[in-house]
Image (tube, rainbow, N blue to C red):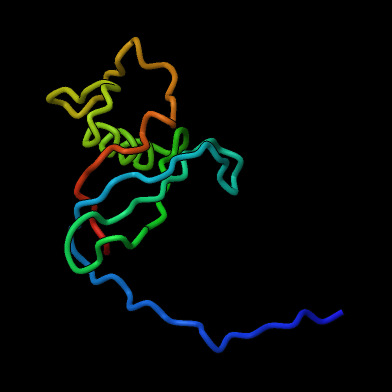
Length: 116
């Protein structure tokens, strides 16, 4: 049976211009990638400027290749999550107390995010 629809009030939002924006994590939830690897799905909300209030989806890979994991480590560090540190040779040393991540603790954290 067909569904009755009315798109007469639909609006198209202007794309967010590339640049850096102050934002806050509005939601974080555990998920799984298409490959079956664990990840965290985030929703950022821009907190200042022309696009204040707009939201952007993001994700953090919790396993996978070295580059994806490096991005996750960098983002969590920028948020102030003490997961460990890189040494002068770019080797990562995980905080021994950080063997679990409570995604709920990410909600409300702020950072400057890049929109490409």
